[in-house]
Image (cartoon, rainbow, N blue to C red; front, side):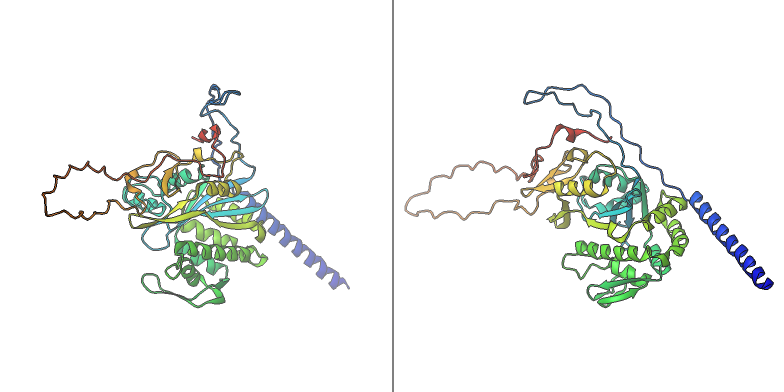
Length: 407
């Protein structure tokens, strides 16, 4: 009996020591992890009210102060990855983590999204590598152009070495996923996947996310598959059995990512993400319209549907983003329009016929000489199909607050 009491006393002391050590370790971890810095709230200079154009109540002038408070506990991040080995950022996502409501929303912006620039290749995915080739760091240029599309600057960014994704998936023990179709590709990355539900290791997962050649809708269909995979990975990651891998995943991302996040910031994000339930993790694709311009495939963001998505998913401010805060090229009635001044308007022919068809000469009688033909008036050169940015119906006419800027 005495030995038994001694045993339970020793066991109790040991268990208490383990619990205490675990508590101290958890406390130290929570003290170590750190939330990233937020973008400062925009400020505006006051302006005098001016009379309404239609008479009646005076309206605020451009730049008048307005409520730009941030939503509590919200962080935004720009994620980019190279999918084809060329240096282009073919995966571009803007995410918002809500640590109060425990929600995680990501919006993919298609790689071919057209941007308002002068150079020939006007695709968003060329910005990062183009900046690098011209002595820049890449991310500043990409971040700037994403801001023009979303209306706000992100708090954080991460350009991920896709080899890191392989390591992360392997650290999770693989991800179970239903591959939608056979995927075979040898011209560059070697990808061979059979359809069906299966456990994907890191290499197979990378092949799944990079593959797009066999899709009818190309990159847009690939984005949809990426979203399904990321959701499956997130659901499996937040299971209790994967929590011990947090430190390993943190190390992998910290060592293989060009980011303004510290390891402590990454750990904070991971812990917050683990608090989200699967039904509160969502992935979206920016609404868009594909259009060929100068024999290049582009996607034009659908202005008002895009604004609705930005404000309902990733906008971290209490004030809605409006078209006056964007520098975005979009289509209206078959014409290229812009929320600001359209750069290089000559570029936007959108498949128009540039020259009038040649008409056959009419028959001339041989019985008498034909009268000399009048000199035809010169035909003016074709004008680019560009119009002043209209307001598509059935959306309301933009108000004066559309000119208020976060700058």
